[in-house]
Amino acid sequence: MASKVRVYGKAQNRTALGIMHAYMLMYPHATLEDLRKAFPDSLNPDSGVKKNFIYADEKGTDANWEGFFKGEDELLTTGDGKKVAVVKMWTKPSFDRVVEQAKLYDIEVAKFEAAEKGFGKKGGFTLEYLNGWTPPAPVEKKKGIPAWVWIILALLVIGILVALLMPRDKEVIEKVVEKEVIVRDTVYVQQVAEIQEHFNAAQFEQGKAELNDDAKLALHDLARVMKQNPDLRLRIEGHTSSEGDEQINQKLSQERAQAAVDFLVNKEGIDASRLTAIGKGSSEPIDPNNLEVNRRTEFEIIK
Image 1 (cartoon, rainbow, N blue to C red):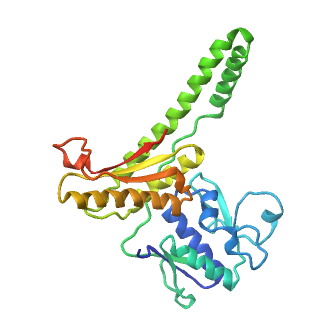
Image 2: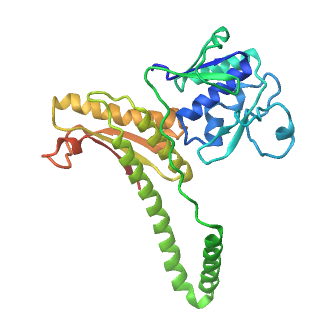
Image 3: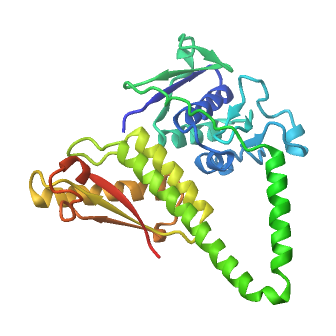
């Protein structure tokens, strides 16, 4: 796959910092956990470095060490709004490893002597967008619920639980527990349905099975739901319209479903045993008179 971002830097550590900023541009929803999975600490053991990333306001021995980039324009901002500092110490073997790792995410590194190019300097490095790629538009953050609302809700829940735990209310307790399980189940069912809608909005190119950036962002959100719900298993079904050859449509639908599974397993770290890819071609149309609506991918929850 063609590179989307090229990183220029005058030194190894500044170039490594640029790689991390490029990754966050491409995956703005990523958390510190995602960063550590994408660029694990094992890439950089040569100088006794314990962590490649820490929260900028983290307390303790590692955080007090002056081996992290702490400048305001050097910090990463993760998808949950946290500020993250990147380690400064990169030997040649470690740097070579992180450059190879970056290629998995369509990030390439220019030679140091090309670092004078003026693509907009930030933290001692520059980024160049390639092959028509541009960063996704920032998602407007929803305002959080005020703290006092949470306090009132917590007090109400405690009061309800105290009342329910009285022996005479055993039958009521069983009903409430059953309802709680159903509600929790409904939450991730709704989340999966919304992500499926976003994934289908990021349409595949006609006749192809390559994931575009919007589809990858939707799958990144799906991976987060699966990590939050370890028992969640999915069957990803590809469907096509009835246009064209039936055997070709069957093969294409299988390849599209498999592309989603491969991304979740290889890029997001989801256990392959929790995912199944099935291509159904044009065998199950939603509306025989609407070809467009029949071109879809469905995320079916396996009970």
